[in-house]
Length: 194
Image (cartoon, rainbow, N blue to C red; front, top):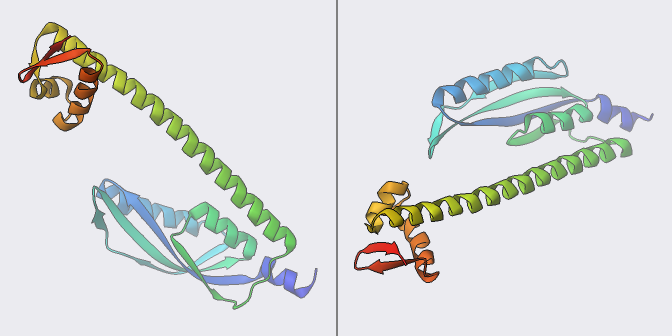
């Protein structure tokens, strides 16, 4: 192994990184980020030199807090592993100025990256399939709920909205579809079975 190969594998790499936690409730985010950093501190190949926490802030319905870490990581392999394991928002290598990766390190990195991308792709496809299945079934449930309600009584769109618990504007799309399919009809402001 020549000197360049040893440098990448065994070099102490100083970097600055930002790790963020997003979630709710506020207290959970506060505790979660501290626990996350404590977990990082347990890793013998990582040394945190400094940690600077942001104030927690509200982002829509969620809470966000980040910490900027100044740390030393033992070797390029661990640097790559750190990125995969802790998913920092950003990472800046401060020292050394140049790093050398062996062919094997680069190949391992690329293979790990590809495996993770494939896993993410598979998870997204599975979630999409589940989401499509849920939408299809929720549409069928809502469709049947409207028909059952109208079998019992003539109802306005507002009344159907109250009974089904679906917002009036969203429910209107389902009602329009049922009208076009001639499954229901409209008499003034009231709907009934066709």
